[in-house]
Structures are given as structure tokens and as C-alpha cells.
Image (cartoon, rainbow, N blue to C red; front, side, top):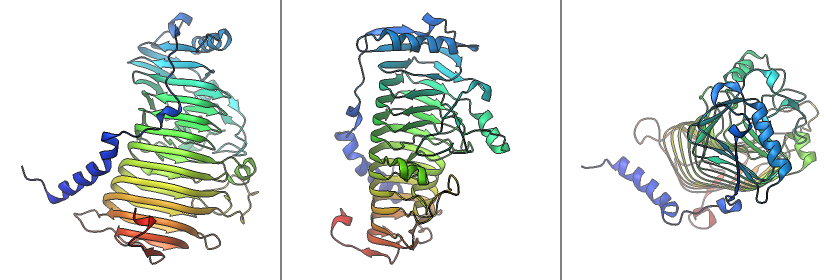
Length: 443
């Protein structure tokens, strides 16, 4: 059977970019090794009933209390067998593994009365959606060490549709809950679990260190508002690998606080690795921002496959953010059917209140995007820096975007207030990006 030139080229590009993953399988997952815990309890030991109707809040809270206070050497596994376990939100504890067996579902109750309120994050100053407090996440951890959420592809279901409808009708009183949030925690491993229908962001590690998210599936309808997949926030040493995400907002968005509150808190996100991710979204595949007031640096995203996207790669900030975005590398990306291939913008995002400083300008420097192939891309890209703080050291290398019909190129790039280099980019980007035939940008 003869293959078309287009199919052959696409296959070769994808295969050649995947060779390192196939033969050497680079990984950062050794940041947090899987714990072999000998102490094991089941949610059924505490009265848990997986019939989809019985409320299991007391069972989950009692099981976690037992783990926290008995403190078995090496920690304890909380086993959730097959069944649907309806529960209100509950806290996790240190040195525990939450293990979901095949066919196990931990399902959130609906109704705001079942969700306690907690204080806003100090780097945000208020709830992300509304002033004041915010609803606690469905699974929550604060100040924890050595926590594992894993299993045999069991499901954590946030039943978010009620929350999405409140957002649409503007009847929310406080910011919606995340599905999973860890605060001020370290050595966190999340793997081999399905997350679905989060009320708000799905997985949110904030002020954390050493976090691994691997082999997860995250699902929400494309019209579900703000259902980001994974949002590392003012956190360091985060590894996201080998996962599938299809949601209503950014698949992965690296953040670090909001305007004057993020500047004052001053904790950057750094050492973030995103590798072998596949997904779809009406918003961005790989995103940085727009809340980056504490700074974001040393981010690597590679071997990414994106389908039916709003924007493939989106780096976003605005006046008043302050902070910095630097040393960001995105490589070996395939994008199919997208509104925009690449967007780097200094005009995206709102503000928490009127106390922000409009003269707090972000610094965006050292952005490298290379080996990107896109088909059915309506617009190749947009790079708009700020006049008072131009984006510098932007490097585009070996990038090919093709339009909606055959090999026809999409509309050209739009650029302003940016300096950098380009090498083998089609369609050719901007006059502000100098052609570099040799040197670091061509690597």
C-alpha cells in the first residue's frame, strides 16, 4: 500500500521526535518513588458502602484519622474496592496511599452546603473567581509529606455539572472547589487514576515541592468552565508525564500567584517538567500563566500531542503582574486542528482588585520553542510583548504550521515588542525575530 507524502512526512516527524522516548524513555518520576507500604486497611472496614447512594464521609474521615494517629511504620494504604462511594470532601494525611481498585469510584456529593469554606491562598489574596473565601477541594491536603493517590485506574468524580451551571447563571457565592489540592506539601505522587468532572481546576499543587503526576486521565466536557487539568502553582520540582487530558480549559498551566499578592508572597514555580502528554481543549495545551507574579522559570515540555485545540502553546501575562517568565522550553509538539499554534502575549488576564500596580511589568525572557508540526492550524502564531517591557531572547526553531486545506500555510504571524531569533519556521514569523542559520536557536 502506498502512503501519501503528507502521511509519510507526518509519521516520520512524529516517529523521529519520539525516538528518545521509545528507546531511552527519559523520566523525572524518580523525584517521588512509589512507596511499598505493608500496613493496609479498606474503606469497608470503616463502614464504607459502594452502592452510589450511601454517604461515606464518616468512613473516609475515620479511615484517614486512623492513619494519621496510629502512624504505622512506612505509612498505610487505604484501599477502595470496586463500587461507587459517595462522599463529601475529606482531608488526606501524611504517609498514606489512597488506592482505588479497578471499578472503584469516589464520587463527590452535590450542593454547596456539603463543602466547607477555607481561606484564600495568600498569593492570590482572594478566591480566584470571587472575593473572600473559597470552597475546599474535594480531596485536600495541607502541610503533608509522602502522599500517594494511585490504583488500577479507578475514578475520582467531582460531579461538577451543578457547579458549572452556577457559574453560568452567576449564582456562585464563593470560588468553586478544585478536585484535588495540595498546599505546602512535599513528596506527592498521583498516578493510574481517572479524574473527571471537576468543579474547577482538577489537580492543583500549590506551595509544594517534589510532585509527580503520571499515567493519569483527566476528563471534563469541552464547555465546562475553568476545568484546567494540572496547575502547578508556586511549586518546585514537578513532574507531569504519560497522561491524557481532555477538559474545558488549559491542559497544563504553570502559575505563581496573582498581581500584588503574588509579588508579595514571592514564591516562583521552577523545575517543572511536562513530558509525553496528549489531549484536547478549546483553550491551551501547554500554558504558562496568566498568574505568574511570583515568577516562573526552568520549565521543560516535550513530546506533546494536541488535538482540537484553541491554542497549542500559550505563554500569557499582563501589566500589573510583575514577576518573570524565563527559561521556558517547549519541544517536539504535534498540533492538529487549532485556532492558533503559538501565542505569547502580554495582554492576557484580569486582576484581583483595583490595588494592583499597573507599573509592575513582567519580564519575559528566554523562551525556546522548537520542533513543532501543526496541521489544520488557522493562525500560526502571535507574539505581543509590552512596549515598556519587550519580550527578549525568544527562539523559534524548526516549526511548520499548515492551514485548513492541504499544505496551504495559515495566516502569517503577528508580532510586536519582541526580540529574538528564528530558524526554519514556516510560515516565516516576524521581522523582529532575526533569521539565525547557525547558533543556539538552530539546535
